[in-house]
Image (cartoon, rainbow, N blue to C red; front, side, top):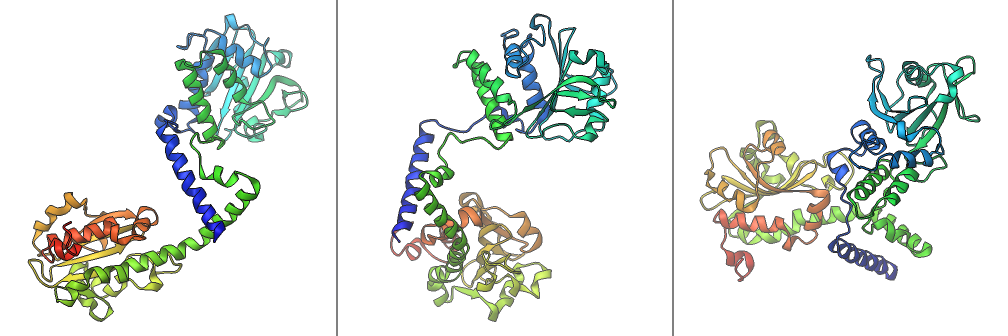
Length: 448
């Protein structure tokens, strides 16, 4: 038991530390990823890299970032930066072959093919070299082809279109094994044996004022790349950090977490069962005993028929909760189940049913009405945050109003403490609104 107490103490301390970190402003907000997908190859990655490499870009750093790029890939003298042009999505022949990035000083050129996730197109590399006139072995030293990817070593044979990559000489070879261009692999990954784009990005950050907008943009983009390669580390402490702190302690906590994961479905099943049976029975018993309400069960399931569509009227029992059909248990029939109590007195006598019900994902608490029931109760919907759930209304219950939560998340956590749950609160308010009870009855003498 002591080790379990240690685990929960560590988790509680983690919660407090995480909350303190967020209060201090630590966060994982990223402007770029908030407007574009981190995997958007063209609109995000190609265009951001272009914006940095372009000497005429709005960064007003001239050729600085381009020179740092050449240095990062070990090609400091490849181009004359003072004569460079940088084009994005360049289509030299106007016939559809778009080169992601093309950099030239009029004598030498660099082709950057950006393949974050996309697959190679047929003869893509060969076609690109053809449209920029880079097929002559005598001019092989004038073209550099850079293949920018997450983890690929080289273009596929399909994409090379008859060319081959010679890794020993870092050349692209034609069908006669003659070099036609230099070849270089560049990786988006930070932790890699290959040349990494992060080397260049970090040198750019170091070259500008750390408090400048450019530095913030560069750091934002680095985080985007890390998210795309799944290498991003949250600035706010995570549960992973807890499990990795100290090998022995982390190993024990990890084993406990696995055990807890295995046992959680049974724990959740128990909470759900208690809410649908003993908790509701305790809440409604004063009204049932006085004849104000009737619990609908297998013995009187026909009472549910006026509240369901025709398709369910002969099989309303399939909507009743039973332990073997618990949401958190394996097997068929574990969805669309609940507990139902019909009103027997007051303005909505026999015209309204209170229910706690779960569908395929959501936990619903609320009210069912017959077709001819007084609609004035619908005035409570805004106050109680009730809505007409589309899936239930279109398939099972013609007139239904519920407050809904995801059962596997907020819902089951709230049911663990049913007496203080929003579900209990909604039922209390509905009982009062439907004139089945007053506040004294519901609160045991304390006004609610």
